[in-house]
Image (cartoon, rainbow, N blue to C red; front, side):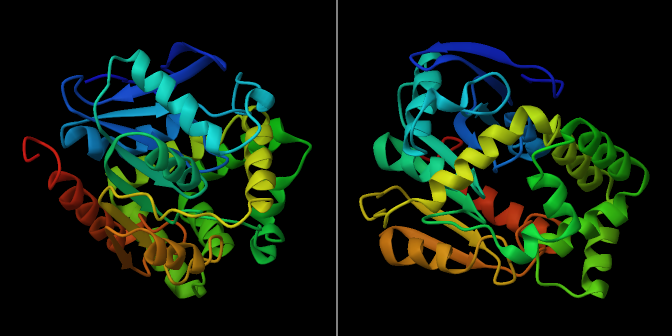
Length: 305
């Protein structure tokens, strides 16, 4: 199994500079490019060990503005696909690969599937076109902390401490920011996450991947600004089998982002699952999301193709 600890990474020389990446899973497994959500480092992939445990070689690659890759390494989100592909080629992978994009990372994943050989495409709560930050989310306490330009070291420490000592409260704060749930529903999902050791550990990894915030903030804000300026996109030339999972109660990425995919991509299946809103993979329904994802992937991999 490659990639034991969250702070483990390697460097790949590319035309954009030295790019950090990390791998989990067997080196002989079917390769899967993991495109992380905005504001979370490439190391958030460690919360997805279930993919590696299912036999996939999961590769997560840093994007411009995160850690030490300059924010001006590219002018567009589309160029993220070129960075990803250079690293994939440097790893000796030349055939079709699986691509998995979450949230803002969905745009980068879509551009990759549009430009490069893709076996299967999976999208969770994905941004798929012009995107504007939801004001309800931005004006929440958590939203203000994440979007604030100052005090990132202190905010990082506060977030980590809150997740460690008050995990249920912290999960509920995330849900209040990004899901149209009432307080009872938020509490129920938070309890489900904390009660399951694997889910709780995944949540803690996710929170740790959001820090240090000062190393991630430039990339997150650049992606938000670039996504806001997007012209109409056309994904109709993506012909790889595609699974998109979206929640009708996601208040971060509206439902029209999933509907756009449904209209444009010929070979797509869209699942609408309430779950935990934007965090569609949390809670009991989140386990269904993971099962659906693996079932879809396994149709085209693990010796079946």
